[in-house]
Image 1 (cartoon, helix red, strand yellow):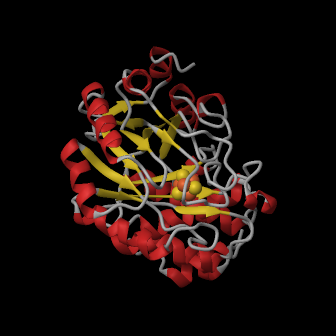
Image 2 (spheres, helix red, strand yellow; image 1 turned 90 degrees about the vertical axis):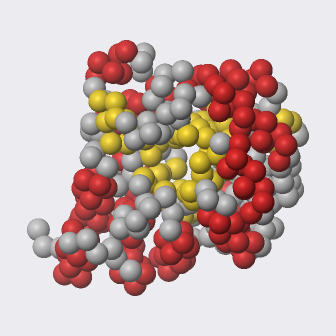
Length: 349
Ligand code: SF4
């Protein structure tokens, strides 16, 4: 089988330690999802990321601690204030404790995200962080996924024990959302300035986005020095304005994740690569982060996403095992062998 010459050269260079730049990434994304070139791109990303991580993957948990009709008003999100059906609520301590225990008691969670809306109550969040820190083992990091935030508030979060922040300047930010793209990027800098790690994502990817748009978006984080990158497709959530465009396939998402992985794996601080939502193809295309979710979720209409789109921990462990990872890593980078016996011990099968 003969591959496109330029693709072969780009992948050769990646194996030699040189990541593709913007133009090459656009080129890689022009190939159809079922082409031999797309398969080669996915395989190269998979091989390089497994090498970098000693064939290990990490499991994250996400808990939505606060919900309201969100001012961000993103036209793809179930919380957008003009189209949401969710009522405002904050998770109480009892429920938060129950959920933190359910994520952390197995001892193999790398990081736990606390999710809020764009506008959020900092005191409530800091309280939730403190409570989560008390319950989670020291091998589980605490992270936040919050709206635009000043440096001072991030400093408070760091003091409370937060390791890192998920933040994104989305594709179509300012057009498909009511938020200012410059402020989104400033928030990412604020997090880094406060000494927090930065996790980002090329998202939310829809069928109408061009390779150029995807590449511009993925390089925002790469140029900034992220610790984690990811790719997320836009889920056509019923009732959200952009659902009309439909969705890309898991296979196309895997190709995009592979290109993000190739473009970012040489960033010094870059450790792990995510894919949303988790799917088998993504974990054989460079992704090695899987996220279990409970509480509210922007891609779901259920108030408890573990009863809807969200995956539980057992399903996450099983998916990583099926994709051939040798280890699960904890938040201190220690490794747990991912064997069938481990699945049995953790009641994951
Ligand atoms: S994606 Fe985030 S900022 Fe946008 S509406 Fe949803 S919760 Fe708000």
